Length: 330
Ligand SMILES: Cc1cc2nc3c(=O)[nH]c(=O)nc-3n(C[C@H](O)[C@H](O)[C@H](O)COP(=O)(O)O)c2cc1C
Image (cartoon, rainbow, N blue to C red; front, side, top):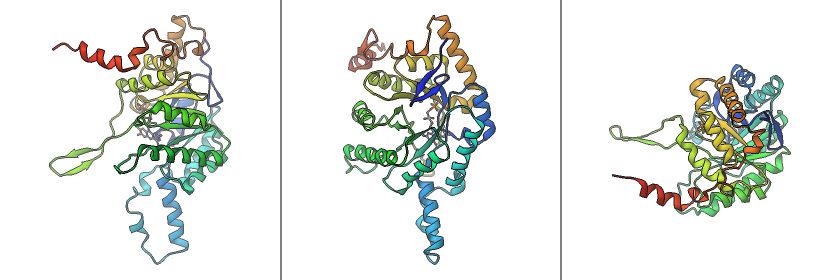
C-alpha cells in the first residue's frame, strides 16, 4: 500500500501531519510524533506581534531609554505568554531539523505589511523545508472593503515570497465572499499550497461581570464539513496543494478529506486530547482502510468525491441547502 505522497514539493511518507500548535514546543513531543509516523512537523506560529515587540524593545533600549516603553506595548500579550520568543523559535527549528528525518514546516503569523515578514528568511536559514503563512485577520472596521483585506494578504505573500526560496502554503480563513477565487489568486501568485482553514475562536460574553471572555474549545469532526466542501470545490483548480486543517479526528475524516481533494491533512485538537502518539493510530487506520478497500495508493483516491468527480455535485451547492431544510420533519 502506497501511502507516500508529495506536499509543497516535499516527499512525504504519508499525508498525515500535526498542524501548527504548541505541541512541538517540546522536543520530546516532536520525537513522539516522528516515532509514531507523522509525515512532517509543522511549527507553532511565530507571530508578528512577538517580532514587532522584540524590535520595539530593542529600539526603546538603544535609542529611546527615557520614554516609557510599557505604555506603547500594553496592548500586546505578555512576552511570557508566548512559549518561544523569536530567537528561541529559530533555535527550536534548528534543533528539530537536526533530530528529525521528516520535513519541518515553519509558520509565520501576521496581518500587516512590515519588517516582520523578513523573519521568513530567518526561518528558512534555521532549516525549515517550507513555510506556512497565516494571515489571521478579523475585519472589525466596517469601512474596510473585502477587496482591501484580500489585497493586503496578497501583498504579504509577495513580501514573504521575496524573502525565501522554500515553498509557502497560505492558511486561509473561510470568511471571504468567494474563497475559491481568492485561493486561485494566491495559487497564481505562487503559493505552493492552500490550507483550509484557519479556525476562528469567537469571544463570549460574561453577562454578570459585563466582560468579553475568551476560551478555546477543541474541535470535533463536524467542523470538517466546511473544509470538505471547499476542498471539493477547489480540487482540480489549483496548481498547488490543498491541506485540510480543522475537524480531523478519525480515520474516516482523513479519508473524506483526501477524497474531496486534500493532498495532506493536519491534526491538532485530537493530538492535544489524546497525545502525540495518537497520530500513529490514525496513519495505521488509514493504511488498513485503503487495503481493505483495495486501493493501491493514496493518490488513486484523491479527488474522487470532489465537485468534478462525485456522482451528485449538487451536495456541494445551493441545492444541498434546500434539500436539508426540506428534509427536517417537525
Ligand atoms: C492550542 C492551539 C494553538 C494553535 N496555534 C496555532 C498557531 O500558532 N498557528 C496556526 O496557524 N494555527 C494554530 N492553531 C490552529 C491549528 O493549527 C488548527 O488549524 C486548528 O486547531 C484546527 O485543527 P483541529 O480541528 O485539528 O484542532 C492552534 C490551535 C490550538 C488548539
